[in-house]
Length: 458
Image 1 (tube, rainbow, N blue to C red):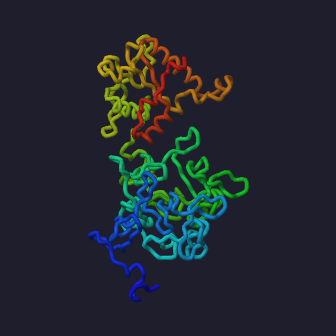
Image 2 (image 1 turned 120 degrees about the horizontal axis):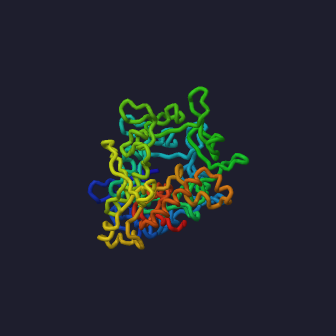
Image 3 (image 1 turned 90 degrees about the horizontal axis):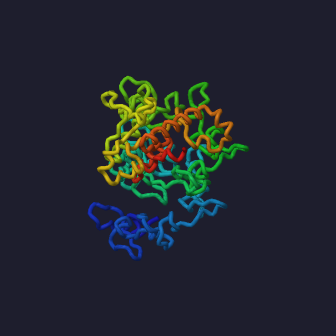
C-alpha cells in the first residue's frame, strides 16, 4: 500500500529515529518521546512492575501483550493470548489459527519468520542455520543476543549471574536476565514440588511438566505427557507418535537430537554426539563430555564416596573452616586425608567429615554447630544406594521395613551416630537427594541448612 508521495510504503515514508546509528522509523504514542522509534522511547514500557516490554499500543493499552495488552484466545478453555498475523484468524492464539500454518505440505506448525523464508515455520526455512561453522541448528534471537546465531552460540544472551554461562530462560514470576537454574524460572506451584515451571499450549500455567504444565497425550487411556518433534503427530506422547522414529532401517527408537548430533536419528545412532575428548567414542553426558572426561569428574575411590567428597568440599568452602575428610584431587588423581574416629573404643565408627571443637569456638557464627558437645561436629553423607534414610520407611509397615535391603544398614548407621554423640560429638547428616537439589539451585541457599540433626532419630 502506498502512502505519502505515492512511491513509498507506510514504514519507509516516515522519518527515521534521531538516535545515532538507529534507522528504525519514528513512532510516537502519547506519553512517549517524540522523534524516536518505539525502542528508544517513542512507546512507553508496560506498567506491570518489573516488566521492560513495550506497551501494546495498537489498542490503547498500557500493558504489553503478556500482561493484558492482548486479549485471551477466543477458543474455549484456552489461556494463551490472541496473536493474529496476516492470513490468520482474528482473536485466536498461534496454536488455534491466529498465525497461519507453514506453507510446507502436511506441516501444521505456525509460520515463524526469523530472517529466513517468509511463510514457513522455523524447521522449513523460516529461520536460517546458525552462522557458527559446523552448527546445523536454526538461528534464534533474544534481546541482548547476536542475530544470525542459534541460542547456544550467541543468539540468546547468557545469564547475568557471575560465572554462569547458561543462556537466559525467563518465565513470568522469575528473575529477568537469569537462566532457569538461577531464578529465571520460578518453581512449580504444586505443594512440595521443587521442579521449575514449564508450559505448553493446553497445559496449566504455573506448574511443571509433571503437574500439569504439559497436557496429557490424547491417545485413549494414555496418561503420559505430550511430546512433539517435527514429523511426529501433534498432541501425542513420544510412545504414540509424538516423536518420529529413528531413520535407521529397523530401528524403532524415537528420534533424539542434542547440539552437535545428527538430526533424524535416535540417541544411539547419532542423535547424541560423541565426547569431545580426543579419541573417545563414548556419547556425551554433560557439557559435550562423557562422564569420565568431564572436567568436574571425581574418579571412584574404593571404600569412599565421590559424592560425599564433593559434599565435604562444598561445605568446607561455605563454612570457611577445614573439615577432616578423604579428599580426591581431580587434577592430579591423588587421594589425601583420612576419616575421624568419633569413638576411640569402636574403630569401625568413622565419620565422613569432622570439625574439631577448637576450630569452631574461634568463630562465634559456627559455635552453634557444637552446641551441647565438647568434641566437635561430625557430618554424614547418606546416599540412597548404600545407605538408608527416614523417607524410605515413612509409609512402610514395620514388617516390610525389616525386609527392605537397606534397613539393616540404617540401623547400623543409627548405632554409629549414637556412639559418636555419646562420645561428645554433634552429628549431622544430609540426604543425597537434598545435596543434588542444592547443586541445581545453590545461589542464595545455605548448604548447611540442608543438613539434619542425627539425634532426632534416637
